[in-house]
Amino acid sequence: MEKETHSPKSIGGYIPLELSQGEVYYPELIALNTGRNALEYVLRTRKYSTIYLPYYTCEVLLEPLQKLNVQYHFYHIDEDLDPVIDFELGEHCCLLYTNYFGVKTETVKKLAKEIKNLIIDNAQAFFSKPINNCDTFYSCRKFFGVPDGAYLNISNTLGLNLKQDLSTDRFTHLIKSIDINIEEGYADYIENNKQLCNNEIKKMSVLTKTILSSIDYNKCADIRRKNFAYLDEHLGQENILRLNFSGEDVPMVYPLLVEDPSIKQQLINQKIFVATYWPNVYEWAHVDSYEYFLAKHLVSLPIDHRYSIADMKVIVKALKPLI
Image (tube, rainbow, N blue to C red):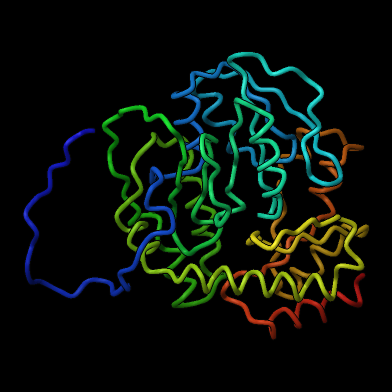
C-alpha cells in the first residue's frame, strides 16, 4: 500500500460548505473517479483480451476498451432483460452484464454462479450489494447529486499510486439546480459529461466523497421503493416489460415500456423529463432488434428521493390519457 502524505491541517479562515458528516455506503470498496475507469481497472487487473457486452448499454463503456485495445463483441438480451449467451467464453474472455434499472439482481446472482469471468455493471443499481469474487462497479452520479465518483468491488488491486481527482470545475450544474432550476443547469450537466471523457483512473475526489458521506441512504432507498411500487400499481397493467422485482432491489427508475414511441416527448413537453437509455443503441443494434425497440419505446420514469407519492400521482395523471 502506498504511503499518503498529508499537509498540516489549517486552522481558521472562512467557514466552508456545510455538509453533515456520516458514512459512505461502500467504505470497503475502491473509490474511483468514474464508472468507465472502474471498468478499465478491472480489465487491466484481469488482463482480459476480449469482452462480451450487451447491445443495450451505454457507449461510454467502449472508452476503456479502445484505450486498452480490448476486443469487444455484442450480445443480445431477451424480453426479461436477461443475457442470451449463445457463445463460448474463452480463457481471457469476460462477459459484462448490466443490472438494468436496478431490478435485475436475481439475474446477477444466477450469472455469478454460472460464469467465471463476469463483470457486473451496477451503474443503474447503486444499492445492489456486490457478490463475493464478482467484479462489480458503480456510478454514484446516476443516483445522487455528485459530479462524478464510482465504486469498484474487486479482489485484486493494481497497486497503482493513483492521483486524487478534483471535482470543483464539474459542480456548476449541481449548484444551478438549487439556486435557479434544473433546466438552467442542464447545459452545464452536458458539459460535465464531456469533461468526464478520457480521464485517467484516479481516486474519488474529496468533494464527491464528502457529499456521499452526508446522504441518508436508508431514506433514499425507501423513497425509491415506495415510488416504484406506486407507479407499478397504477401503470403495471399497461407495461409491456415484465418486471420481476425482488424486495431487496432499489430501482433507479420505473421502466415503462409502451407501444407509442411519442410518449417520451409528450412527457418532456409537460416538464416530466425522461432519459433515453441509450441513444447509441440506434447505431449498434438492428432496427428490428429488441434492443432497438427498448431504446425507442422505454419510458424511464423518475422515482428518486426528490419525489413524493404526490409527484408520482402527477406522472400517472399525465400518462393515463397517453396510454
